[in-house]
Length: 287
Length: 135
Image (cartoon, rainbow over all chains, first blue to last red; front, side):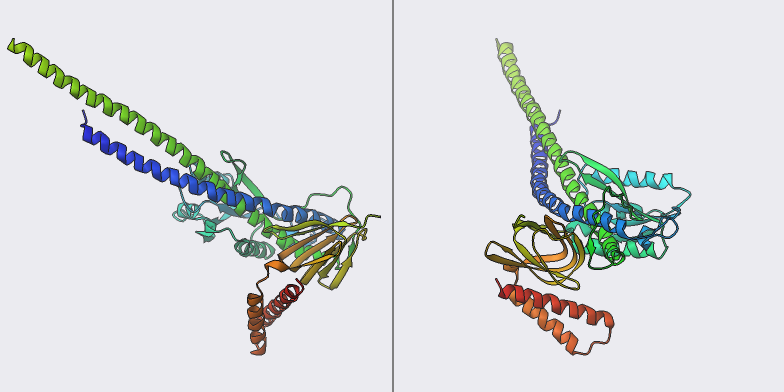
């Protein structure tokens, strides 16, 4: 039977852990709120850009299957694939990172016969894939410290350039979409070649510039905002996952403390009872 | 005929304004567009400069750089790469940026990319100072 002092030490240690997980939960909650605001404020621009792209693409004449209207629209057989994996920079976020890594493994397994290259955003994915044999185009550990539109631009420009130079045939993003505080949605999104949904009734605009030129300016921005939005979603989802995980850890710690306290009281009571029995039986022996 | 239309200015990072306005001056890539209500649908690339709009008798302005303008009969959407309200402009910083850009241009830079970038920076800084002067 452990001594009272041992149990007290154990309780103190669990209480310390609880304080840390509680603090981490608060921090994540604050960060989550900010990340959520940014996701929401990026939406109007993205929605308008998508609409604009549909209109402009519809107005560009020609563009059959074999002659795309723009290099970023050219559809090729998918032989060389670029997978952009967005993981977190830190752990302690429940299954957030491991789900992503598992999903990326099965993505690769499904395309065993094809060439897949990885672009890794976030430290956790980098740490995992760096020790393996899959070719890595580049890695950006620590990019989620602060999600910047400029960073997304750099990455998007690189992807677009490689695609336009015919070095890769398709680009996929794999990330966790922020659904709610307790749920993330694992999302696989193909961003290149850009697929433009057909528009029902196109509007007859006056074009200040020829539509071809506008399309040329629109497409890179479209890729840019797609990467940026994925980064924002992933960062919000990460904070949400961490908050949930830390909340669970805090309530676990509270439960452990409660059980240990109960046990400690029982041990103390047992030793008191034992002493009383000793005294009583000692007195009885004297009679 | 309605005498207002909706003006919306967004950047990838935020929504700057979404307001009913009477009239707007928008810096397109090929020169300023003056837009009133019931304008014919139009698409243009956005240039660098001061975007101003009028609500009643109050005139306000923003600085925008790069992007697109979509004009419809009842609304105008400006998708800018970057934009700020006149009230947010840091005059000192804009002045410093203008000085830097001019220095770079004066030091007969040879690389074409650098010249283009310095020219753009100078244009942005000038637009910001102008908008700040009007506030």
